[in-house]
Length: 151
Image (tube, rainbow, N blue to C red; front, side):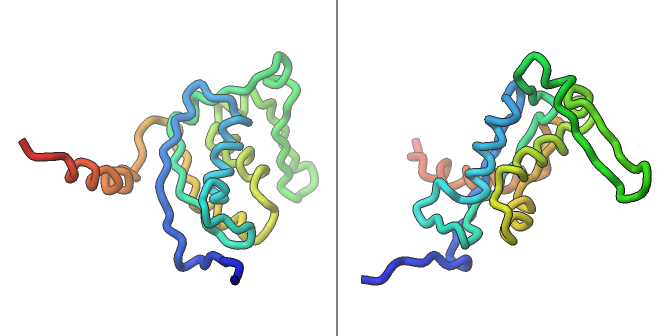
């Protein structure tokens, strides 16, 4: 008996809509990272990109826990030029760029391989509740409505 090896061409990708309103940043990031990697699928293999697409809405409603995190946790960036460092406390960072904060948290939870960029490309984050991916979710719901018995 041979061991089954999933092929990337045979992967069926689904779409998941996640509402980030009043969710904790780290817990949301772990759930989304698992979906992007495809760990919940039966055909999961760590060397194959078999994850699904994820759309996160209401990113401005994300929160972090802990008394001191909004002031002590820092987002640090450096441009590469002398004096080009920028430090922003997370409390302010979540108010100004919540999409970037969520993307950084999820990116840190994905495996550090060549697959990470492809997995992150399937992640869409929106500040408000509207997004342009309604057709993907409508196509998913159509077979269910067509299966309803006629009166």
